[in-house]
Image 1 (cartoon, rainbow, N blue to C red):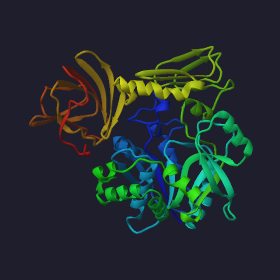
Image 2 (cartoon, one colour):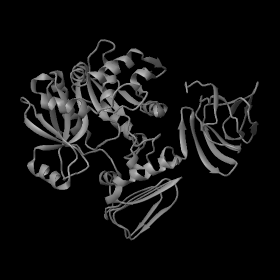
Image 3 (tube, rainbow, N blue to C red):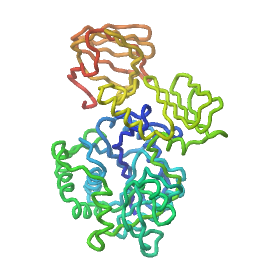
Image 4 (cartoon, rainbow, N blue to C red):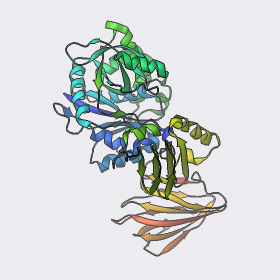
Length: 478
């Protein structure tokens, strides 16, 4: 059995603001341990016994493609990064992945995993995945339902039907939306309902058959987009205009609910119970639940002091955070924003992010530290006509050949050596040396060395926005 992990990485994780931002969402963050949630998802299938494991495929937004590529490199994983020109939910994303998987004539079993979930018990997860692979070889579309341990109102549910042959799986009786608490308690008491995990397995050809029968319009748009696909270095791009015409729908709505109701007309649907310490980490209270706690139920990370606190989550990314005499709070400090919220109100954090968007504030989209394919920069200070950035360029990294209409730049090298293009000249700038880039001058910065290049950049001018960039050449295709 050839199993291909398909990792869907399109979410924005707005309820985990301010750690998660639109252009650097939660799946890219190391919320549990040292790996990001994306990296942990890739590692989760390592050593899966009884199958041949194909390289992973990540379906993601173009916005953070370079960060995902770097995180895969850190794991020494060679995989496919399939870029969606626009967000169209999970059904089109999986359809593109299935078309890509069938491109060379193969027909692997696709193990479809959201990139932003936590699963604590990897061994239990892999054992159930092996059962799912057996069912998928028989032509079934398999989903995994989480064995509930509480009347959760934040998850959808799957009602199980009769046994699916001799396996531990069940036929799917129906999908139900997020219930109120009384209904959720009745589901828990009945013992025949599972939480909807968003995890799936099926052969690529079986998914294409199912989506053709259920949503032929989605399949047609994806086929048109795939027909215009091209390889751009380590990325696979599909036709932008064709994909823009694709309807937006989830795997559940587009196919799974119809399979449950269709009987013999569609591929068989099966649900396998999964008890492996799963969480979708959908909000701060969910993160608190899965992290190790002290004797008073507190979780702390970073420079945090707690006095007479209970059941509190406190995270510091830099400054000292001190909490005294508080219960059931979430306190999150980042360089440009601080969140304080009661654990019972964590779902409402999204409303803060919506307000930031309406007010066109950058804190909803970007961190102060912004990652680029060549490295990163951190805006450490700014005023009416100036901005100071710390810039780190990784070895071999090259910024675009560019020009600014409204600002000049002073560069001071504090570590490493910079190769600078300014107008028609090229020269090196070493540690404790500086150079000046006048307004309107073509320029480029490169790191020719084998250690990170660290610089301080002082910008001055009438407008300092990141959109004041005219690019003439760029090795990263931006």
